[in-house]
Length: 89
Image (cartoon, rainbow, N blue to C red; front, top):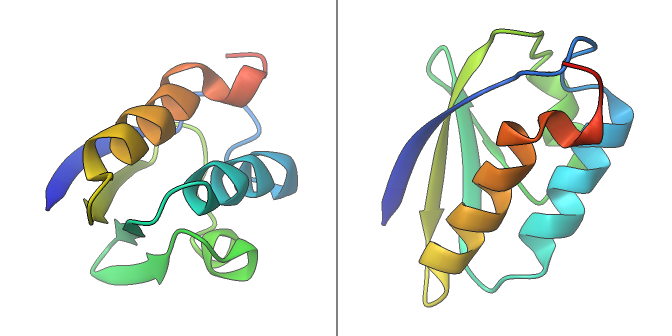
């Protein structure tokens, strides 16, 4: 199991487009992907779940990935956050 903290860097936060990018990336992997915020854990492969986090710019989330390809999955997802989902930072 891999656990990392990721920060929302883009100005608009985790709205529909970045949420769908996150889910699309997470779904490429076999590993289970979860995002946690304020003791609330959601499935990282669910757009609705990701949207319920209502994560704004600067929010810190815990990324938890578990499975055979967990390292590759965690790296790919973390890269999305680091890049600000390709949006203005």
